[in-house]
Figure 1 (cartoon, rainbow, N blue to C red):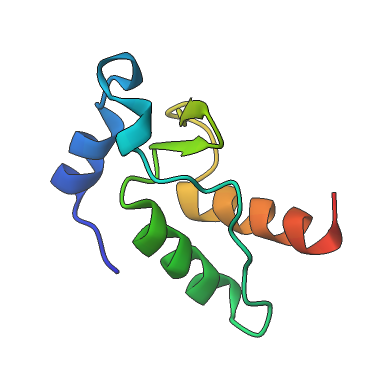
Figure 2 (figure 1 turned 90 degrees about the vertical axis):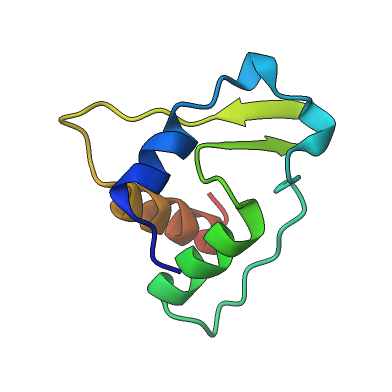
Length: 88
């Protein structure tokens, strides 16, 4: 799944306070396929979450924000998936 910059900017600008939490995808119970490459797991996550910046875990709404000078989303998600795999 390839996202354009305007699509990412639109997703990033969502106000989680204005979104019904029940409408957000719940990522709390996701099991990742460890046979996939990190890139494939990230693509799988993006397909399930629809908006990588706004989702929920159980009953808690989550909005992800990044600093302009921070790491790339892909790097951050890859690090997250590696930590999940190792049980951290």
